[in-house]
Image (cartoon, rainbow, N blue to C red; front, top):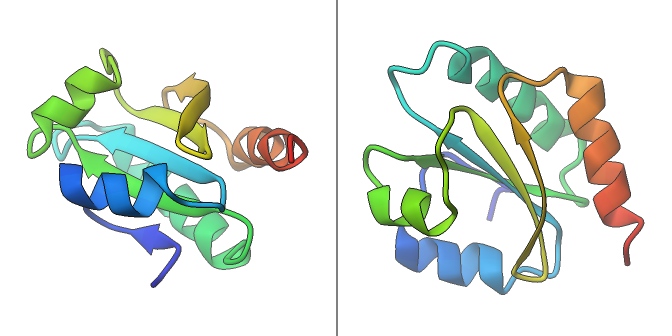
Amino acid sequence: MSNLILEVTDDALRADVMQSKTPVLLDFYADWCGPCTPLAATLEEIAHENPDTVRIVRINIEQNRALATSFEITKLPCLVFMREGQKVAELLGNQPKPKILRQLEALASRE
């Protein structure tokens, strides 16, 4: 399976994220969210450059309202960093690639 999942549902989240041994970055977005589009391009670059160290999962809040509610998403875009099924960090807004990479490195160093 690719480390970049374009869409995910509640069932897929349980299978692909909560049980993943690889760190996971959840990208909560909406089609109407302006800053979400450039962030998606940045995340795609990161996914292709780091295929073995992180899985990036995009979650459309319009199609997955229960997931957005369960993660208490109130602003977009919202990046949630997960390790072994647990939320360990969060970044709000369109973040620069170096900042996202620093957070991923911090996540990986917690092993």
